[in-house]
Amino acid sequence: MKSALRIGILGAALAVLFAGIGLAGDVAKKNYVPSGCDIKKNTICTMEIWLAHPHKKSNRSIRKELKGKSIKVLRHTIQYWKPRGGHPPTNIAIGRSLTAEDARWAIDFALRYNDRIEGLIFQRLNPPHYVAVATSAWDDKSETQITPDQLAQLRDPKLTTEEFHALYVKLTNEAGVAEAFY
Image (cartoon, rainbow, N blue to C red; front, side, top):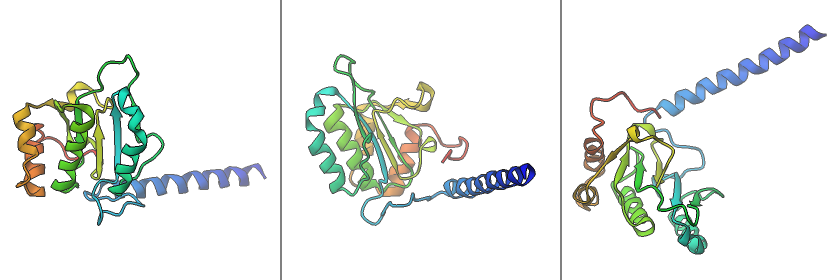
C-alpha cells in the first residue's frame, strides 16, 4: 500500500514537473501572450506601478483609466510609496512586444504620475507584454540612466514599433547581450 502511494505521489510530481517544463518553453517563445490578455486592444498585458503617496487619493480614477485601456488591474497593480518615503524610483520597464503607441502611453502615464523618468530597465529582463513604472524589483546593474533628450527621442510619435524598440535597446546598451530572460 505504501509503495503504491509513493508511486502515485512520484507520478503526480513528475506530471507537475513536465507541465512546468512545457510552460517554460511557452514563456521562452519571443511573443508569449499570457492567457486572458487580448493584445488586439492593447499590447500591455501586465502593468505594475509604484506611485508617490499623494496619488493614493486618485486610486479609483487611476484604476478606471487602466481598465479603460483594457489593462488587467489586480489588487496590487498599483502600490503607493510610504507617506514619508521620499520619491518612488524614476524608472520604467517596457516589454519588447508592446507597440510603440502603447509604450509611449506608458511613458506618458509614468510622467503624469511620477514626474520624471531617469532610467530604463533592460528589456530582456521583463516579459514581452509588461510595463513597470517606478520599479525597485531590479538592481542598479539592470537599469541604464537616460537624459531628458533621450526620453524625448523615445516619445517621438514618428517612431515605428521596430524603431522604438531598437532605440530602447540602444539606449540600454543591450545590443549584443545575452538573449531575453523571458
